[in-house]
Structures are given as structure tokens and as C-alpha cells.
Image (cartoon, rainbow, N blue to C red; front, side):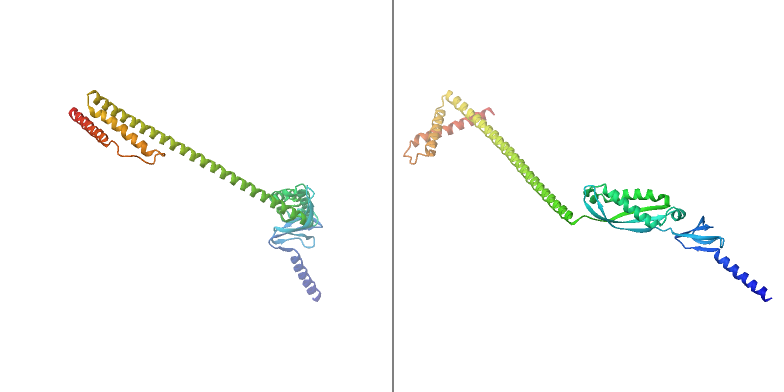
Length: 309
């Protein structure tokens, strides 16, 4: 009985042990490869999994979450023979656990070296100026090359980012001097352009002022000519009236002409610059008579107009 009890207890212990060995719980975000007699059979997904005890065993535990791999700083020689230091970071995710476990040994190390060599290849084919100004293009080219290379490993490279590009100190100083010279040049160009624009505006202003002055002179000449024309018409009418009066035998018309010439002569004498003294008395009686003749002539003209009306 004691032997049977011992065997039964041993059987229970073995059964419990076999059940424990036949159960595998895989955490979320991971997958296990299952091997039978050393050969890959299938992949255990997250959760509760049953395997054949003793015969089956877990081969490789694969992290299926997106992972970050740091690429340490390294020296790169550009196309124009400039030495720069570059570092970066790689984001990747395993999509096929079996390929990641059996297609490559030490997956992280392989991705690290692949990225390092391609950084040198891609950045070494570019000039220094392109290296500093086209970082997005560098990232895109690296991502395309590395992702294609890791595809057989069941890996998806999601992003590759270049963190820092550090040129040599003397090159940085040279670039700073070049940038300063370029800014000085731009400032000089802008100043010259501003002066040129100011001269153009000044010339335009002078042109408009000259045009307006010419327009004013033309308008003044036109009005002066119009005034002379009206004065001439008035004098013609006056001459015609006087002529008609003389033809009618009116002595006032003759007195009008005499008074007009008399007054004009006095005006010229008084306005002459070399005349300082005028001797008097003048023949005032003749002037008054002429003015009276003018008055009579005017009244006669008005009477004629009223009679015609």
C-alpha cells in the first residue's frame, strides 16, 4: 500500500509538472517562437498558450513594440572633403517574430551597423551646404535604404532622425564670416535700392512739378491772351463809336482822343525811372474839356441805345 501511495503521489506530481510545463503565458507586446526538437514550429501570441511538455520549448522572446535605437556620434567626410560629426536615432518595430529570430543574429546590433554605414554613404555623397540645409532629405533617403535592407528580417523601420551635425570649429568660423559678409552685402544692396528708389521718386516729383508749372503757365498765357483779346475788342468798339461820332461831326470825340493821349503821356512821364521831377502847371483846362467831351460822348451813346430799345 505504501508503494502504491508513493507511486500515485509521484504520478500526481509528474502530472502537475507536465501541466505546468505545457502552459505558457505570453505578456502583451511580446511574442515567443516555439521550437520542437530544435526546429521552429509556430509563434506564441500574447495570452494563454498550450505547448507539448518536454518536446516543445520557447526559442526566442521577441519585443513587438516600437523600439528606439541610438546611433552614436561618428565622423563623416562630405563630398567637398569637409569633416563633420553626426549622430542619430532609429525607430523600428518587429512585424514578424520568426524572421526577426531566425533570419538575423542580434537584431539591434545589425540595425545599428546598417544605419551607421548608410549614414556615411548618404551624407558622404552630399556637399556641406546640402548637409546643413537638407536634413529632411537625408532622413528620407536613410529611411528608404535601411527599411528596404531590414525587410527580410521582419522589421519595419518607421523613422530615422539625424540629431546633430557638428562641423569643425574652423569651418564654423568660416561659415559665420561668410554669413556676415552676405548680410553686409544684402544690407548694401538694400541701401542702394532704397537710394535708387528715392531718386526715382524725387525725379518723378520734379517731373510732375514741372508739368504742373507748365500747365499753370499755359493757363495763365491763355487767360492773358483772352484778356488782351477782350481789351482789344473793347478798344475796337470804343474806336468805332468815336469814329461814328467824328463822322457825325461831334467835337467830343476829338476831345476824347486828345484826352486819352494826354493821360497816357502823363502816365509814362510819371512812371519813368529817370524822371524825378515834374514841372507844373500843366494845361488843366484842356484836360477838363477833354474829360467833359468824354462824358458827353458817353451820354450820347446811352441815349442812342435807349432810343433803339
